[in-house]
Image 1 (cartoon, rainbow, N blue to C red):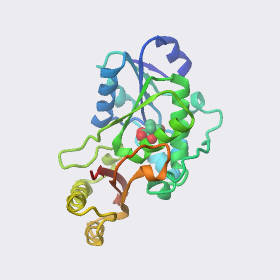
Image 2: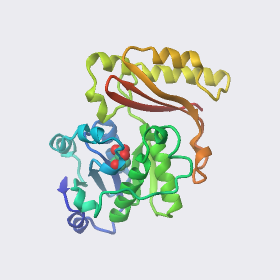
Image 3: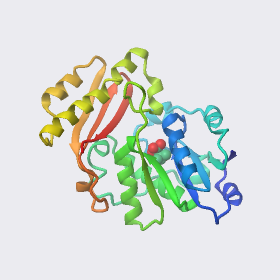
Image 4: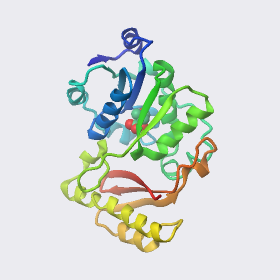
Length: 273
Ligand code: PAF
């Protein structure tokens, strides 16, 4: 493992003839991130893992300030992997001016997360385009937990004709079904128990969908979830993201959820087909 804060230095060390996989992260690594790193290592000769809390994708400054940062413990988790290069830059190494570009994401950045986090997806697309531009990877790995983000990145890549394979990787879950996330550690043990129920609600909707293809989550299920202690629902919707971007091939119907458990915002999704 080698760690770089300068992309120019990192590029000097990676043989440009090798097949490169890129795993962009914001750090606070958990098993979900490590599964991306392992998949990338199994499919590429060299893997670049980026650890950077990107300011342009935070629509709320207090969220940016409290986002967990644990570089030393992240490096400990990556230490035993061979053939990986870690890029942990300052803002200056990436941005001349810390602002987002504006992308044509059609309707993708107006629904679900886009509605609740204005500007978020332009910020994500900005940093991911920069990383693709710098490292020119053959393959780039993203988790399905942020399924809308994945669709935004696929759309951006298609519209800008960037030559990279976007590899979507299955969500890694805790034993009770909660999707792994860097934000989970903010919850108290009581909140954590409540959060563990979210996946069960998604499975309930999937069961109903199987018997009778519904296009909305039944109101009784929304009410049941919303009445959980400490839980404030933002959305719980069935969507097919390909309807919102002409760059996507059929992504299929999925259930998408965002809710607050205490002060922690949780998002998740599940394929219905
Ligand atoms: O999913 C994330 O952690 C971030 O949105 C990403 C893709 C690393 C861009 O900052």
